[in-house]
Image (cartoon, rainbow, N blue to C red; front, side, top):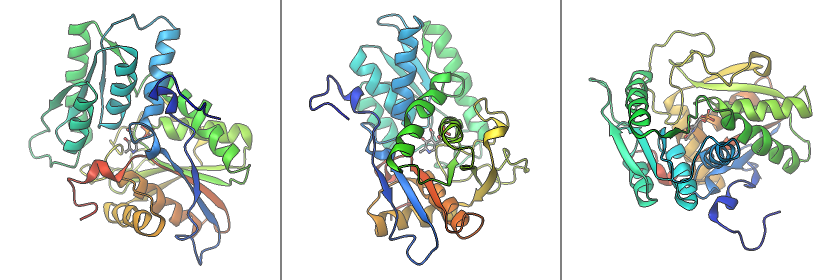
Length: 319
Ligand SMILES: Cc1ncc(COP(=O)(O)O)c(C=O)c1O
């Protein structure tokens, strides 16, 4: 239960609503529950990682008062860190590919972050951040961390990413769904949300099936060849085969979603359910619909609405 007056907006991270998408599943056998992570203060689930990473680092003595925090971001992690660091008094530098939408850089700057934008690889397209583009951002980030003797809030490496979802997102879903949960599917970036939630679900009930969602043409986690690295599902699908958080024992299957399916489902979420999410939220719904029409017919599936559609108004997602 949230307190009536919070000591800062950081305490408003988490405890998001879970909604039954009964308009979208009308006529289908089974239910889809959506966890509305876009209602976090930075309008994405990544606020959870930001809060956990900074609080864990403080508790472990890894972050000194006033020390600079740096992280590479597709915008959402940076926004979360800008909020948490701003409230707690740490300077924050966000390093982001120019391939991500401009709203994200503007929002981080508004929240007090220093934003460093990194050029994409020659031939890359705006709005499509590939694994190669991300490598350039990684190089720049490592350089800044060294130069500034900064704390790197590394979302691909820090256990806090897993912990944020294992300790909070997953248990919140179990409690809100009152145990009525058969399956979970999630579009992976770092894999932190998938891994943390899946571990919490498996601990609660080993029969809950957990599916990893990837872009069609860049499904390396499913062991497929990359034929289309420049997909449009921002926030993940980076063609990174070795993701630290993904443990095979918690992965029951893989689902691939193409750009068109993700876009169509993001639009359906908005129009039919009044839920204004981004591309990856659409990808999660598209995957859940594949499950409910296939192996999870008659079951209850949970998805995450990762971030807000407001972050994509400069794209054609909602044109
Ligand atoms: C919009 C969006 N969707 C999906 C993801 C992937 O989440 P995770 O890194 O937990 O796999 C991210 C991560 O930054 C994101 O910003």
